[in-house]
Every structure is written in structure tokens, then in C-alpha cells.
Image (tube, rainbow, N blue to C red; front, side, top):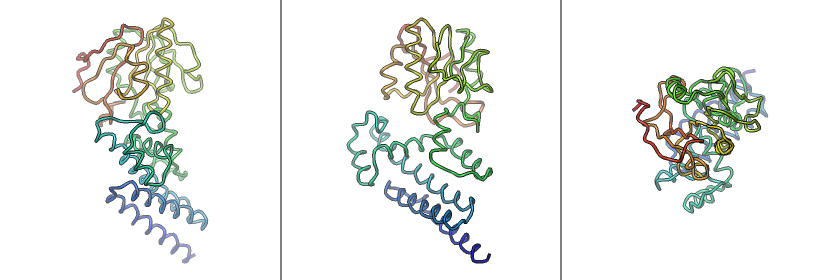
Length: 296
């Protein structure tokens, strides 16, 4: 028994040192070295049957190291004034060179950027929930939460549509269908939830859409554009990512209303880590700096 406790204590000490080292990381290579070390400790803990607590401590450090690698990759875009989506339309030679030097593949680098894009409150709450429940911490588990959409995460209402904003728009448009919602945060009596597969449904009338903000957002915005071509009006609350393919392919064909400042979703105290815009498909294409929304 004492030997097992010593093994666990030694592993936790190693993990603690690795976590402290993350604060000093300034290169992708260093972040990935820590991620690799943490993964090796996690594997050893599993083999030694050291328990989920030790495994999760190591998995947390690995995930934080992956997040740091993603932040460093994303900072290359920020420095050049534009964000690119690796694995889709990136022509950024500097970033691709950095990926090659780090010894990782483009899809892996893209995954790290996805981890980095998960807002900090959601990231931290996901880790805390897994630890409390004694469930395994994984990168795929975190990204599943992200793919559901930050505003529809079952773990938090941090990303639910601000009710004051929705009320203002509902007064103007009179929504009849929420095309992408959970039962607990649906804005209309009629809505499509996860079990309905909103992308496979017919959208008609005046629709509200606050889509998932993960990689599948392009499909939702494309569906909104197509629904408007068939006669619907679809009001979309989306990140103002004007450098992405889905913005150029779809959003510029609707009425775009840029919102001042950063939205505080679901009554949260922190602003979103991105600017937001309304895109109204079914109205003539135009750009509006919308001052009816008073948040600054």
C-alpha cells in the first residue's frame, strides 16, 4: 500500500512540475514536449492502476499544453492581421513551416487551434466537471462540447443568446422557428433540437438561428442562405469572422449588421472572445453598423 502511494505521489509531483513549466512556454515545440510528457505519465498511471485522479491530472496538463500550442499557432495569424483555418484554405507558409518543424501534421495543428478557440470559461468548467464526476478528460470530449456550440453546451448557459438582443429582434421580425436549439434554451415554441437534425429539415417563414460555433458553422450558414433563396427569412447571430470562406460564400449576400463591442452571452459577466454580427438572409445585401443594440 505504501509503495502504491509513493508511486501516485511521484506521478503527481511530476505532473505538478510539468504544469508549472507551461507558464514559461513560448514555442510550439516546448508546448508539445510537455504534452507528450504528460501523456506518457497518464499512460503509466493507467498501466500502474494509479486511479482516475492521477490519470486526469496528467490528461489536464496534456490538454492545457495542446491549448497553448494552438494559441501559439493562432498568434501567427494575429500578427499578420488575419486568421486562417488550417486544413481548409490556409496558404500561410510561415505557419506551415512551424508545423513541420514541430513534427505534427496539419489536421493535428488544426485540432490544437480548435482547443485554443474554446472560450476559457467553457474550457475550465469542462475540466472541473470531468474531475468532479471522476470521468476521463480527453481532447475529443472537449471538442464535442465545442461542436455542440458554446451557446448550447449542456455544461453552461454562457453562450445562450442574450435575451435582450433576441427580444429586440423578435419585436422587429416576429420569429416563428428556432432552427438550432436545445429544449431548455429554445427561443420559439417551434424549434429544431439535436434529435431533429435541423440541417435536414425545411426552414420556412421567419427563422432565428444561433448556430454551433465549431467547424460545422459553415453548413448552418449555408443552409440559412439556401432557405432564404427558397422564400424564408433567417436571422443569424454569428461570429464576425469575415476572413473565412463561409462569410465570403454566404454572409455577404445577406444584410449584415455589425454589433458594437463583445456580447455577453446568457447573462455572463465576461464578453465573448470574438466580435459578433447579425446576418439576415432574405433582405437585400447591405452592411449596417447597427446602433440599435446599445452594448459598447
